[in-house]
Amino acid sequence: AASVYHQLIDLPGFDKVDSIFFVGANGKIGNAVCKQLLVTKPDLKITIYSLSHTLDHPNVTYTSDLADILNHKVAVLGKSLARRKYSKALAPFRGASSRKEELTPYKCRLILDYTVPYVPIDLSGFKNIEHHQIAVLDTSPSTSNFLKGHFDTAFGLEQHQIYPCHAGCIINTVYDRQTDEVGEICVNDMMTMWRRGLELGLRNKVL
Image (cartoon, rainbow, N blue to C red; front, side, top):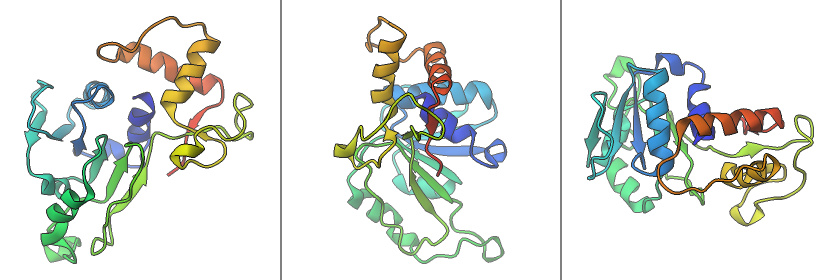
């Protein structure tokens, strides 16, 4: 969760982003990320794609229309959906202009995706939208001697990359942290674990 949160707030210009679209915000990771974002960016509006309303906050709204993803400059995907759902939602807007002088039909510019496995969305016809995998830690020897080699090759990662959940298990062992993963994520613990990862030289993969 900390990796996703920091990937967002470290985006160039994120301080000027007024709203985001979130798929999977009702999950443990998404819930923790949203709560921390609303603390650090109290004016941020979050639109969650879900029929279940689990996060009660004046800045949070829910939608059942996946096409709403186009109404936000930044979108976060934390739940795997059939790619045909995105294709259907985006179909009416493919090839539309996204330039302000042509009365922009869509605002979206960046889709950040922490689902595993990462599967690219067909964005043909949306030349100004980028889709990136996030929540992957860089363990390059140039920044860290903590971990070396291939760790998550079964998930399609490259050498010197590891998923935060797997790295977290190792960090827990190093710090002899005895805890479980039952219930909601404690945001304070989340930030503590992030700081420990930074101390060990771990960093988010650069987009």
